[in-house]
Image 1 (cartoon, rainbow, N blue to C red):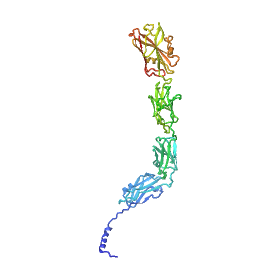
Image 2: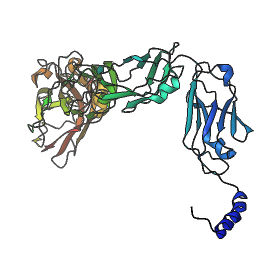
Image 3: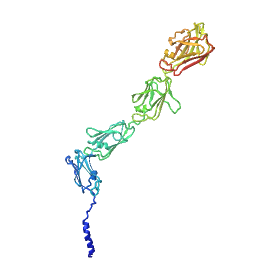
Image 4: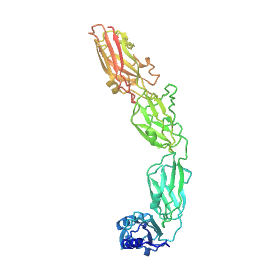
Length: 513
């Protein structure tokens, strides 16, 4: 061996006091070396205190922040004590549960007093029960792969044992999402979900139960469960409905929009309500929001049931008026199957009892033999006639008459006051004044000499009615020789069934003397 030089020995001797006088700083990671409780199953008495012992003194604020203690997934509140610089003691405020799963966690933000972090997250789970059997999902409603006939089902999950309701609430997912709330039965084995809004028809729904769902002892399902159901047992769209009167004797005929012709159903009575009959129950709102009538009328919707809608109008429809009824596409049956074509129907209110009064003819007494009337002259529009004589002679006063013939609806008659309020007569250059009226079988003035049956099929057609207007005519001072002779019946005139003329009827003719 080569002998060491004196200088080398001297240097080493100088270094000894320097080295022995320095403090060594550890750079080892912090570790958890023990904890309490440390058993898998712990009695309630042993759970009054939780302790974690570290491998070195720790930074207390950081370690307290890194520490957590949970029971059945929920944080447990308590206070922290430090019986030693490396020992954290946690005292829960609440007593433990006899069926609890408890977890102690310290994450890597914990540090010792030299700034060394915890090597890895520490986690330890223990239980207060010996039951370690996982719960099982036994059945569901709806069943997996089933189709249901409702969009507001009560969804049920039946388990093999009582389960922790909060874990179910957190562990069940719906796709598409469903708003609602969970509820447990008295045994805790059946969990129900009540939707608070309708589901969508003709839709697949997926329910996922996560593996974290737990029983009362903290045992989880251990695996994810998935089921799918379908809303709708009927996939057939509804058929085209019928539009008809109450007893179905008159139905509105289909109008084909492609043929460029308007198909109109006639003989509809203005008092009839419209019955829309469907081949299956339908979504009422989808009908009402798509139904339109033109001209617009005030309607109320009355449903006999889900297959029959009655369109009720408080006031009668207008007589001899064309109405268009439209039912837009998109209305649905109760399972959401849509009818995808617009429907149009046209009706004309021209039934036997819904016809407007019609003036058939005007006849004027203008022919005499002496003082005896011999006939009536038919007054024609834009025509002319000559007065038979000067009617100012008292013998002829009030003997001149004007007969107005109407065709009315079946069963209708003429109210005398209605006629008086709406009848107007004027003549130029003469004085002509209505004195009285007589109607139909009540005509007595000149009834024998001028029977109404002589004109316009009166007496043979029950729809024909006549009003005899008794006139006082004075043309003694008539100059010049002629003038306009005008008769007006206002549009407000209506028969006893409420059928109005609608428009003013007017006849203008001219006299030549």
